[in-house]
Length: 196
Image (tube, rainbow, N blue to C red):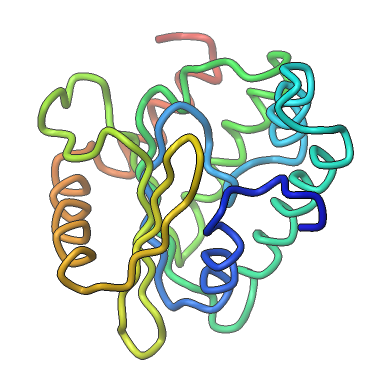
C-alpha cells in the first residue's frame, strides 16, 4: 500500500496468503478481513479515521485491500480455509444493525462453501481456548508452513518450523474444543434473529 496503512510484515503475509493451499485463522474481537463484507470493512476503517489513526485515503486503501484479498482466494483450485472466530467477533456490534446482519449472513454463506470450515469459539470454552490473540497458519502447496501474528505495532511472519508447529498443534486443539460448524452456524442464525 502506498501510504503506510498496513502493519510491518503484513504485505509479505498477504503475498503468501493469495497462493497457499490452506489457511487456518483464528480471530478475536472483529470479523477477519477475508470474511468481511465491504460495509463492515468500511465501518472499521472509518472508525480508525475518526480516531486519527489513519487518513481517509488510507481507509479507502484498507477497504480496497479487503476486496483484493478475497478475490485472490477465488481461484482454481481454491484454498481450504478453516476459520475459528472467538465469540466476541460475532457478538460485537459493528456499524448499524443492517451492516452486522449482512456480515453475519456472509459468515453463513462462507460456511456453506465446499472448501471452508467455520467455527465459533464460545466464551464458555474458557481456558480450553489455546490462543488469546489472532493467529493465522498458512500451508503452501509444497506443504511448508508459516504463521502470521500481530501486536499493536507490527505483524510477524514466522517460517521457522520449531515455532510454527506448536501453533498448528494448538490450532488443531482449538478446532477440537470449539463447537461444530453446524452448531456455530446455528448460533450465528440465532444472533441474526435477535435471540441470544
